Amino acid sequence: MKIDFKKIVIKKYSKVDQNSLFQFYKNTFLLRHKTIFKYRNWIYGVNLFGFEPILLLIEKKIIGHAGMISNKIKRKGKNYKSTWFVDFKILDNYRGMGLGTLLSKEWMKISPHHLAITNNNSLNVFKKLGWKEKFDHERAALILNPLKWVPIVKKTDERILEFFNFYKYTKKKDNLKCKPYKVKTNINVLKKIFLENEKLKVGEVIINRDEEWFNWRIKECPFINNYYFFSKGNSFIVVNLIKHDYKKRVNIIYTSCLDLDSEIYLSRQIVNWSIENNLDIIWLNSDDLKRKKEISKLFSYKRKINFVCNSNEKFIKTRELTKIFNIHAIDTDSEILYVR
Image (cartoon, rainbow, N blue to C red; front, side, top):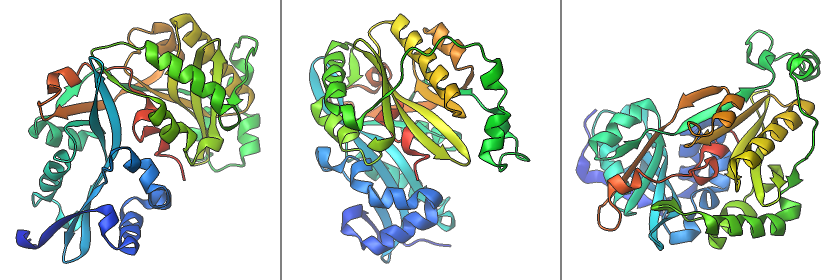
């Protein structure tokens, strides 16, 4: 297939026929398409800077999509605009023609600073465009009900699988000392300690999670009914409870602990509570597991995450962005990939 590049049009997703946009999502994002379409402005943080995902069209047909989540980066006390690169797609029939590179370059013009978690296929493409990799990001998990991962039995009645979950009978647990608070009904309590803790964070380059960020990402979250937090003093961990593919997941999406002992204590309580409630897996993203050995032991299954970043070099250098730390699942789309 030959492409007439003169007929290619790039538009913001609010400027195309929304029925066509829905159909594109349905054909490309499978089970997630309804969630993405319904909550698209919230998911992509459009209200923050007015940045929107962009679409690649040929003769009014959508053939490509480059999503983005707006965010703020703080460097030496100043805020800078940035975006996470997410939900990138070129239709199969149009791949291998340079359209992905074209769309990526247009996407990079929208914001001066760029962050992304990529799959292995995309990693080399980003590197060719000048992006740099940060090597300390990992996804960690603790599987609590191994039977749910056996293909032959995974569709067995849940009550049977939970009864035969030997983990909860053999795992030595501390006494359960704290239970989670529902975020929605304790939003003001959480907001107060959240903002206080964020002000304490220092670093050359960090994500700025201010009140505006909190209101968008947590208070206005359409999935807030599934959000809970465990707390000890001013230390807390926010989790998202999700049922996906016959499994009940506990996604640790944000951790704000004033000391390592508090984080270890709360993490253990999350494990204990999850076992008591027949949950199947606890999952988190972290860029600090190598330092936190006790946390690393607790969530024994780990794999590397491809984290890459880029800058137009005007305000923050790309090499400076590689020093960004304290990234959480809540900062990008990692924690809503399983939401239906």
